[in-house]
Amino acid sequence: MEDALSSLLHDVRPAGALFDQSIVRPPWSLRFVEDTPLTLLTMLSGEAWVTPDGGEPVLLRTQDVALVVGPEPYTVADAPGTPPLAVVHDAERCTTPDGQAAEGLAMCGYEGDLDTSTVLLKGTYQVRGSVSRRVLDALPRIALVPAGPDGCPALNMIVGEIRRDKPGRQAVLDRLLDLLLVASLREWFDRPESAAPAWYQAHGDPLVGRALRLIHENPAHPWTVAELARKAGASRATFAQRFAELVGQPPMTYLTEWRLCQACDLLASSDATVEAIAHRVGYSNAYALSVAFKRVLGMRPSEHRAAGRALV
Image (tube, rainbow, N blue to C red; front, side, top):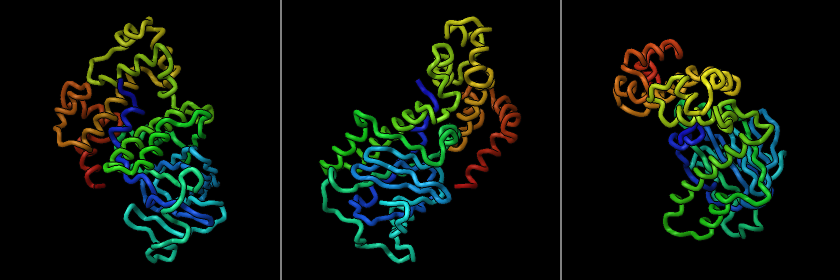
């Protein structure tokens, strides 16, 4: 069944698994100015410090995962005080701090053992859509997920794929990075210090969680509080009260919000008519969707579509 975390996968595109597939040697320091909304960092071996501009350094140990949120620059280095030796602008361009082409850097090499050398794995994600934004807005600038005692199956699969070096490796790595991202997000939100959003925590409740899954799976259904309560196995009053307590808003308000999130993404990602989108997300016609759009978001669907395309 669909939920906001699962929906994230529909709106992310991983781009490039490794920084030039390099093994880094101390002293080393990489400054990233890629202007991407979400980056996943992990050390296949060794340790590193991740320092966001204007923020405190975060230690990244072997198989820890750091989710870096937002387009602002950050630095990954062997120590917090090591000045940047290279600046990564995007997957195709890496320069020295003074803007010269960075080729043959002494800190990078292709020889070494994955188990004993310092190896940085980096996945960069282009994230689009209102549904994905709900997830990213719930994350801090850097969300650190420590390595578990039994390791991470997705990360172990990535290491195995890197070692095999067979045709199609990048395509496989990109898909494994999808898996690692969602597993890391789920692990982060399950941590006490994450202050996970109410909608995520409520998924674990036997009553409210069932209703949320029904809403996410089929937002176009003409749901009522009574029907959701019945399917959740509770009285209408008990269900409505518990939903509001756990999610922070009444069931119908949440349903409206979810439908509009879906509509926003369809308007931005497709050429479907407003009428067709209205039916897909649970409104009887374009006028009904437009009224809800204007009331909640302060604009008409056509204005939202035009604004999104103006940013492309």
